[in-house]
Amino acid sequence: MRRIRPALLYTLLLFSLGYVWPVPLQILATGDMHGWLQSQPMGKQQVGGAAELLAYWQHVEGYAPGKFLVLGCGDFNTGPVLATAMQGDPMVEVMNLMGYNACALGNHEFDYGIDRIAHWQALAKFPLLAANLANLDGTPTTLTPPYSIIDVQGVKVGIVGLITTGLPTLTNQATTLKVLPYAETLRRVVPEVRKHGAQVVIVLSHIPQPELKALANQVAELDIPLMLGGHSHELDQLKEGKTWVVNSGEQWDAYSRIDLDYDQDSGKTVVLRAAQVWLQQTKPEANSAVAQAIARWQKTLDVEYGKIVGYTATGLARQDGIYNFVDDCTLAMDPLADVALTNDGSMRQDI
Image 1: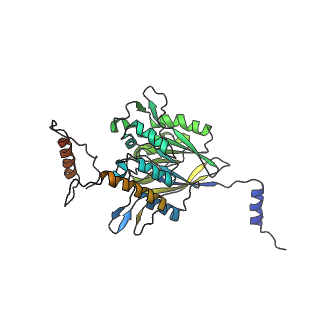
Image 2: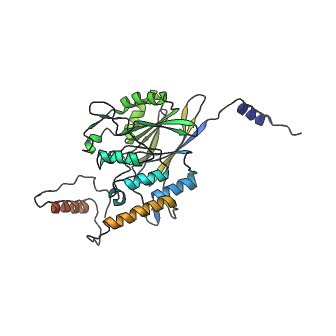
């Protein structure tokens, strides 16, 4: 007769008494994707790419829908022509295929007007979140939900969205809305989220790292373990008090992998791991479903926008080359115009 070791006997006793081990919550976060569906060459390597990123998640991170939270930090829209000409729809389809659970609303989501945001909400299998948006009279807006509560392997995770308070200076499409202060919003919304059953609360924002760091200090009493930021295209992380503040880069060139430890007995959540991963590969693999969707959109683009209208032997570089070209085109469209102006920062890649 074999004897049961004391350690094993103790483990069996704990399970028989209904003891529950802490639950690891695995998060993959991306920021400021800006329509960069396709990978880009960098020397002899390729950087980014939606199909490549999903394949990497599956093979390296062990990603599977339902076991991870996949979160975006806003500005999924506006960038290369493939996504921009189709007004963001390719991005929504691809993010659906990649299994995104939520995305913060970014300022560039307003580039096609408020009606387009409602259109994306109908297409997306994930919500666009912004708890600090309100109507001009202060009443809640119906444009986007303030938060979402998601069940991840038996743990209810509340995701509270925040958008940058600089929105009124970044778009003229939000004139019917006002942006509320961050701390005031969280003090109002986080207790509501917990009241509705959230065991873990995460802030998913389109807010730069310095502002998010300050916010973590301002609302330390809310005991929020993780704040995810965007808008400033940073790849950075830091711990401010008990809160990890993480920014996940841009253009799907990088992402953050974060593991949370939730203790069901104490109700406490701590960050076990926060790492930023740079997606630069020599021979990247691509997820076939996402690659096929992108190829279909590319075929549509080639049909509608594939006519060659000009040629440059040397390319056009920022700043003067592209800015002068754009302003010349603008002047040519209106023979009555004398001057064309282009704001600094609007042209972000060379031709």
